[in-house]
Structure formats: structure tokens, C-alpha cells
Length: 114
Image 1 (cartoon, rainbow, N blue to C red):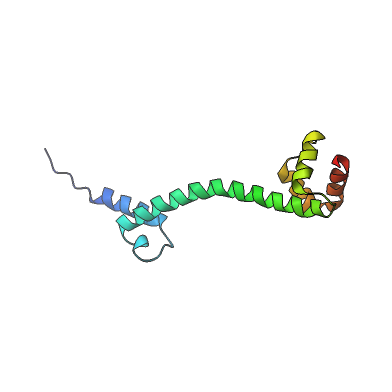
Image 2: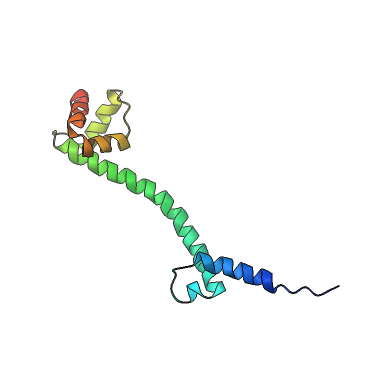
């Protein structure tokens, strides 16, 4: 069997990995093994934090709604319960946008469920 030299393939593979770690510091941007580990870790964090971002946004919406509802003498939990009983089909994202950017419209929503 003839000998196969894999220099070009290995070089391509190494360059591909090192291109992904551009901007990393120390050996993580220059050494193949450390770079590969850094890519794996970055991928794990990226996946987990994409999930966390959704929870963070929902928590932010809650804070915005609560701050505006308090001005109308209600608590957040009572407001959400009243929305459910009043069959108002606005989600928290829309309510937060109304609370932040259109307080007069939000006041009408609060008045309609109170």
C-alpha cells in the first residue's frame, strides 16, 4: 500500500479551528488543542445563554409591567389575574411595550380589567 501524507489536510483542519478562535487570548488562539477546547466551551455557553436570554427578557417584562401597574394602585399579580378573568389576550411582551412606550394606552388596559 502506498504512503499517504496528510500535511495539507491537517493544515486545513488546524487553520479552520484557529480561524474560529480569532480574538481569543494566549494559547487559545494559537494552539490547536487549546483552541478546540475553547470552541467547545464557547458553544456550550452560547447554547445555554440563548436559553437564559428568554428567561431574562420575561423577567424584564415583569418588572416593567409591575412598575407601571403600581402607578395605578394595583400589584402585578392582581393585574395578571384580572387579565385572565377579563379574557384580555395580551401577552407580557406587548404589555411591557405598552407600559414603557405608551403609558396612556396601558392605563386604559388597566382600567378595563380593574
